[in-house]
Length: 110
Length: 118
Image (cartoon, rainbow over all chains, first blue to last red):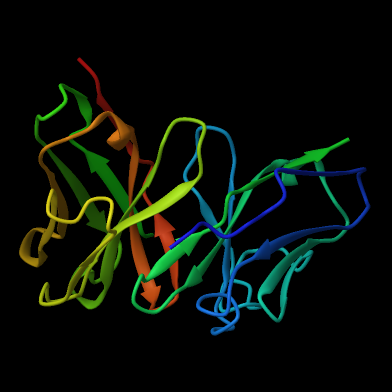
């Protein structure tokens, strides 16, 4: 199972919106609207930000939203803040594999 | 609150063995599937293995199948990963994570570093 494809880096100014894509195949992202997204600050453990495609855990800001179209899932961060600067990973259930992560995206707040 | 604390990492020679532990607290450990996920230095996340709440169902990534063994002790609220025949490419921070449903991991430990080098 190959890793899901994410852009290496995305940047934006404070207050702007950015979108991170996560492209898989019909065997993973395309088959299940069940992508999760994780935020990881340097030296820290990943933190769940979005699950089952578009749901936010309690305590996660509503500035974070998830969606999917075909084989590509997306994470949008609106009203970008300095604290959002981190690495972001998508993850898809993949049936028999059964979990595949994305390549990771470094978000920079300019 | 939910806490997952990994231990057991360290420096080991290629071909060697290591056993990782994950101590869980703040939730009913025996109710949840658990997983190990690793991250090589400067690289992305890679799922390694999961074990069902009772221990009866286990899955491994192809990269570790036949070399790693996941287990749990619900009486001790602990998760384990026995790693044998270690290779340089197994060098990574190993995280234990709680699988909230079939599709995502809601809590992660801080990780323990395993370095395989001669």
